[in-house]
Length: 154
Image 1 (cartoon, rainbow, N blue to C red):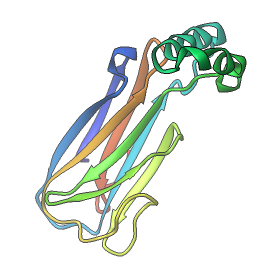
Image 2: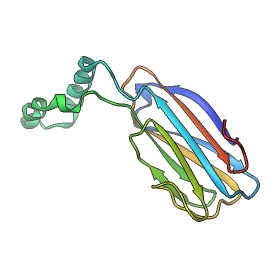
Image 3: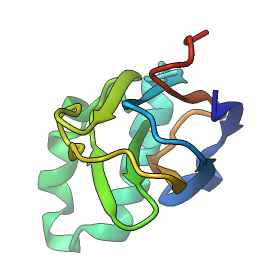
């Protein structure tokens, strides 16, 4: 196992990135990633409405505010969104901008999960970037694992 990290973030982490690097010191056939975070949804719609109204104040022109407010409930419940990007030692290997709160991904020379680029799994330092697009709950826990095909997943 190259990475096995459990941690938590909060709304102050929104619109930021967390990077985890690990050395790959031997050739492997495939690299596997498991990523999970929770909660996915902000269950408090009143709090969600308040957050949306604050965003409208910041980003919507005053003359468009009434129209924007009229459809605000269609965006509820709000959700946390964390996505994954992968870089090998030399180049970007792709991103998985999924809304799924549980993701199982892989990269190999001949195939890869959608959003990731297949290619040789070379030795050197690999980096996994978590992009915290939106954290709307008071706390959001996550679990990230990375391992090679020859290693057994836990």
